[in-house]
Image (cartoon, rainbow, N blue to C red):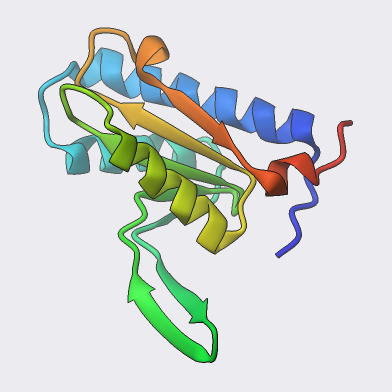
Length: 139
């Protein structure tokens, strides 16, 4: 799938998503279930005009095998940015591998891994880009 946004637009969209995550975290604080943050972030994004898909079923092509599976992808914003939410003490390499796999399977250029079990969302967000981001126009 071709993303018609530029690198700058994708980056701006990710900053906006992080801003809404900060708003949700400031209102609710840490310590709740991941699903609560997911619903509230989805609400904030949709209320502000963003297109949000939740818990996607994605077709996976493996050689000549085609299968559909529930990836349990938290959010896909504007059909462009994969958002994976966590409520864990520490982000582990498996969490990073998970979001990178989602981005690859969906052919999306950017992902945000956001841990709500923190006192500072800004310090807990991990952005990821891949080869699909590098293929986007700069401006």
